[in-house]
Length: 231
Image 1 (cartoon, rainbow, N blue to C red):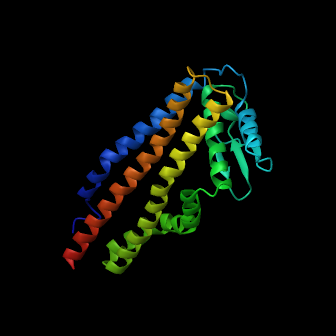
Image 2: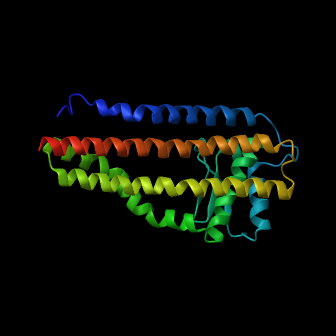
Image 3: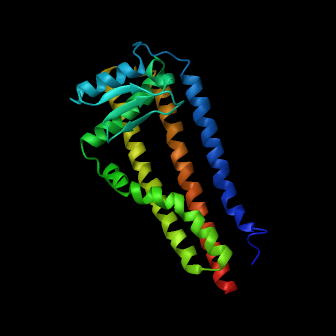
Protein backbone atom coordinates (compact mmCIF):
# COMPACT_ATOMS: atom_id res chain seq x y z
CA UNK A 1 0.00 0.00 0.00
CA UNK A 2 1.29 3.47 -0.88
CA UNK A 3 0.32 5.04 2.45
CA UNK A 4 1.96 6.78 4.40
CA UNK A 5 4.73 7.62 1.94
CA UNK A 6 2.47 8.70 -0.86
CA UNK A 7 -1.28 9.25 -0.63
CA UNK A 8 -3.04 10.11 -3.89
CA UNK A 9 -6.42 10.00 -2.12
CA UNK A 10 -5.69 13.51 -0.88
CA UNK A 11 -7.01 14.80 -4.22
CA UNK A 12 -10.52 13.96 -3.00
CA UNK A 13 -10.24 16.88 -0.57
CA UNK A 14 -9.07 19.53 -3.03
CA UNK A 15 -12.44 20.83 -4.35
CA UNK A 16 -13.92 21.09 -0.84
CA UNK A 17 -10.77 22.77 0.49
CA UNK A 18 -10.99 25.42 -2.22
CA UNK A 19 -14.67 25.93 -1.32
CA UNK A 20 -13.72 26.34 2.34
CA UNK A 21 -11.01 28.90 1.56
CA UNK A 22 -13.38 30.83 -0.71
CA UNK A 23 -16.08 30.77 1.99
CA UNK A 24 -13.68 32.14 4.59
CA UNK A 25 -12.54 34.88 2.24
CA UNK A 26 -16.11 35.76 1.39
CA UNK A 27 -17.25 36.03 5.01
CA UNK A 28 -14.29 38.27 5.85
CA UNK A 29 -14.75 40.57 2.88
CA UNK A 30 -18.54 40.73 3.24
CA UNK A 31 -18.37 41.47 6.96
CA UNK A 32 -15.66 44.07 6.37
CA UNK A 33 -17.75 45.75 3.66
CA UNK A 34 -20.96 46.01 5.65
CA UNK A 35 -19.21 46.84 8.91
CA UNK A 36 -18.53 50.18 7.21
CA UNK A 37 -22.24 50.79 6.50
CA UNK A 38 -24.11 52.27 9.50
CA UNK A 39 -27.73 51.33 10.03
CA UNK A 40 -30.27 54.12 9.88
CA UNK A 41 -31.60 53.40 13.38
CA UNK A 42 -28.12 53.88 14.84
CA UNK A 43 -28.42 51.11 17.45
CA UNK A 44 -25.43 48.99 18.39
CA UNK A 45 -25.38 45.22 18.05
CA UNK A 46 -25.70 44.90 21.83
CA UNK A 47 -28.70 47.23 21.91
CA UNK A 48 -30.43 45.35 19.11
CA UNK A 49 -29.85 41.99 20.78
CA UNK A 50 -31.11 43.29 24.13
CA UNK A 51 -34.20 44.83 22.57
CA UNK A 52 -35.08 41.69 20.61
CA UNK A 53 -34.60 39.51 23.69
CA UNK A 54 -36.82 41.79 25.76
CA UNK A 55 -39.51 41.74 23.07
CA UNK A 56 -39.50 37.94 23.29
CA UNK A 57 -39.66 38.02 27.09
CA UNK A 58 -36.14 36.63 27.48
CA UNK A 59 -35.04 39.08 30.15
CA UNK A 60 -32.84 36.45 31.81
CA UNK A 61 -30.61 36.06 28.75
CA UNK A 62 -27.64 38.41 29.16
CA UNK A 63 -25.76 40.17 26.36
CA UNK A 64 -22.04 40.32 27.05
CA UNK A 65 -18.91 41.43 25.17
CA UNK A 66 -16.15 39.01 24.26
CA UNK A 67 -12.68 39.93 23.09
CA UNK A 68 -12.49 37.16 20.47
CA UNK A 69 -12.55 38.52 16.92
CA UNK A 70 -15.76 37.29 15.25
CA UNK A 71 -16.29 35.09 18.31
CA UNK A 72 -19.98 35.87 18.49
CA UNK A 73 -22.05 33.02 19.93
CA UNK A 74 -24.95 32.04 22.15
CA UNK A 75 -24.11 29.97 25.25
CA UNK A 76 -27.17 27.82 26.04
CA UNK A 77 -25.76 26.56 29.34
CA UNK A 78 -25.24 30.00 30.85
CA UNK A 79 -27.92 31.69 28.74
CA UNK A 80 -25.59 34.36 27.43
CA UNK A 81 -25.19 36.05 24.06
CA UNK A 82 -21.56 37.02 23.66
CA UNK A 83 -20.66 39.55 20.99
CA UNK A 84 -17.23 40.50 19.65
CA UNK A 85 -16.07 44.13 19.80
CA UNK A 86 -16.83 44.49 16.07
CA UNK A 87 -20.47 43.67 16.84
CA UNK A 88 -21.15 44.68 20.44
CA UNK A 89 -20.44 48.41 20.08
CA UNK A 90 -20.94 48.88 16.34
CA UNK A 91 -24.03 50.33 14.66
CA UNK A 92 -23.21 48.78 11.28
CA UNK A 93 -25.48 46.55 9.22
CA UNK A 94 -23.02 43.70 9.75
CA UNK A 95 -23.14 44.16 13.52
CA UNK A 96 -26.90 44.18 13.90
CA UNK A 97 -27.21 41.22 11.53
CA UNK A 98 -24.81 39.12 13.61
CA UNK A 99 -26.44 40.24 16.86
CA UNK A 100 -29.88 39.28 15.57
CA UNK A 101 -28.53 35.92 14.39
CA UNK A 102 -27.27 35.09 17.88
CA UNK A 103 -30.61 36.23 19.28
CA UNK A 104 -32.17 33.74 16.89
CA UNK A 105 -30.21 30.98 18.62
CA UNK A 106 -31.51 32.15 22.00
CA UNK A 107 -35.05 31.98 20.65
CA UNK A 108 -34.40 28.49 19.27
CA UNK A 109 -33.30 27.41 22.73
CA UNK A 110 -36.33 29.03 24.36
CA UNK A 111 -38.77 27.36 21.94
CA UNK A 112 -37.03 23.96 22.08
CA UNK A 113 -36.16 23.98 18.39
CA UNK A 114 -35.68 20.28 17.61
CA UNK A 115 -32.52 20.45 15.43
CA UNK A 116 -30.84 22.53 18.15
CA UNK A 117 -31.82 19.96 20.78
CA UNK A 118 -30.40 17.18 18.63
CA UNK A 119 -27.18 19.12 18.05
CA UNK A 120 -26.74 19.82 21.75
CA UNK A 121 -27.50 16.19 22.55
CA UNK A 122 -24.86 14.72 20.24
CA UNK A 123 -22.22 17.36 20.98
CA UNK A 124 -20.30 15.28 23.58
CA UNK A 125 -20.05 12.32 21.18
CA UNK A 126 -19.16 14.57 18.27
CA UNK A 127 -16.48 16.40 20.25
CA UNK A 128 -14.90 13.11 21.33
CA UNK A 129 -15.16 11.72 17.82
CA UNK A 130 -13.58 14.80 16.30
CA UNK A 131 -10.55 14.47 18.58
CA UNK A 132 -10.18 10.68 18.54
CA UNK A 133 -11.12 9.74 14.97
CA UNK A 134 -7.91 10.54 13.11
CA UNK A 135 -5.47 9.17 15.71
CA UNK A 136 -7.38 5.87 15.54
CA UNK A 137 -7.43 5.95 11.74
CA UNK A 138 -3.69 6.67 11.67
CA UNK A 139 -2.95 3.92 14.15
CA UNK A 140 -5.12 1.50 12.20
CA UNK A 141 -3.33 2.29 8.94
CA UNK A 142 0.13 2.02 10.50
CA UNK A 143 -0.57 -1.28 12.24
CA UNK A 144 -2.98 -2.78 9.73
CA UNK A 145 -5.62 -3.06 12.46
CA UNK A 146 -8.83 -2.74 10.44
CA UNK A 147 -10.88 -2.70 13.66
CA UNK A 148 -9.18 0.49 14.83
CA UNK A 149 -9.61 1.99 11.38
CA UNK A 150 -13.32 1.17 11.41
CA UNK A 151 -13.74 2.65 14.88
CA UNK A 152 -12.05 5.85 13.76
CA UNK A 153 -14.35 6.09 10.77
CA UNK A 154 -17.46 5.62 12.91
CA UNK A 155 -16.29 8.32 15.32
CA UNK A 156 -15.70 10.62 12.37
CA UNK A 157 -19.24 9.92 11.13
CA UNK A 158 -20.50 11.08 14.54
CA UNK A 159 -18.57 14.33 14.16
CA UNK A 160 -19.93 14.75 10.64
CA UNK A 161 -23.50 14.24 11.91
CA UNK A 162 -22.97 17.19 14.26
CA UNK A 163 -21.86 19.38 11.36
CA UNK A 164 -24.81 18.31 9.22
CA UNK A 165 -27.40 19.06 11.92
CA UNK A 166 -25.70 22.43 12.41
CA UNK A 167 -26.84 23.54 8.94
CA UNK A 168 -30.59 23.84 9.66
CA UNK A 169 -29.78 25.38 13.05
CA UNK A 170 -27.72 28.14 11.45
CA UNK A 171 -30.06 28.71 8.51
CA UNK A 172 -33.05 28.95 10.84
CA UNK A 173 -31.24 31.42 13.12
CA UNK A 174 -30.49 33.62 10.10
CA UNK A 175 -34.09 33.51 8.86
CA UNK A 176 -35.28 34.40 12.37
CA UNK A 177 -32.80 37.27 12.41
CA UNK A 178 -34.08 38.75 9.15
CA UNK A 179 -37.68 38.41 10.28
CA UNK A 180 -36.99 39.98 13.68
CA UNK A 181 -35.07 42.90 12.23
CA UNK A 182 -37.73 43.62 9.62
CA UNK A 183 -40.67 43.30 12.00
CA UNK A 184 -39.03 45.50 14.63
CA UNK A 185 -38.07 48.15 12.10
CA UNK A 186 -34.37 47.92 12.91
CA UNK A 187 -33.63 47.27 9.24
CA UNK A 188 -35.23 49.20 6.42
CA UNK A 189 -36.10 47.51 3.13
CA UNK A 190 -33.09 48.94 1.31
CA UNK A 191 -30.78 47.78 4.15
CA UNK A 192 -32.01 44.20 4.18
CA UNK A 193 -29.78 43.16 1.29
CA UNK A 194 -26.63 44.06 3.18
CA UNK A 195 -27.68 42.21 6.32
CA UNK A 196 -28.70 39.18 4.29
CA UNK A 197 -25.36 39.18 2.46
CA UNK A 198 -23.49 39.01 5.78
CA UNK A 199 -25.67 36.18 7.10
CA UNK A 200 -25.47 34.22 3.84
CA UNK A 201 -21.69 34.53 3.76
CA UNK A 202 -21.48 33.20 7.31
CA UNK A 203 -23.82 30.31 6.44
CA UNK A 204 -21.60 29.36 3.52
CA UNK A 205 -18.75 28.58 5.90
CA UNK A 206 -20.90 25.88 7.52
CA UNK A 207 -21.78 24.43 4.13
CA UNK A 208 -18.09 24.37 3.22
CA UNK A 209 -17.22 22.64 6.50
CA UNK A 210 -19.72 19.88 5.73
CA UNK A 211 -18.32 19.54 2.21
CA UNK A 212 -14.80 19.13 3.59
CA UNK A 213 -15.98 16.56 6.14
CA UNK A 214 -17.90 14.55 3.54
CA UNK A 215 -14.85 14.56 1.27
CA UNK A 216 -12.70 13.41 4.15
CA UNK A 217 -15.14 10.58 4.91
CA UNK A 218 -15.02 9.43 1.29
CA UNK A 219 -11.23 9.47 1.49
CA UNK A 220 -11.29 7.39 4.68
CA UNK A 221 -13.49 4.79 3.02
CA UNK A 222 -11.08 4.62 0.09
CA UNK A 223 -8.15 4.16 2.47
CA UNK A 224 -10.05 1.47 4.34
CA UNK A 225 -10.75 -0.36 1.10
CA UNK A 226 -7.09 -0.25 0.13
CA UNK A 227 -6.01 -1.39 3.59
CA UNK A 228 -8.45 -4.33 3.49
CA UNK A 229 -7.21 -5.32 0.04
CA UNK A 230 -3.62 -5.41 1.28
CA UNK A 231 -4.47 -7.81 4.13
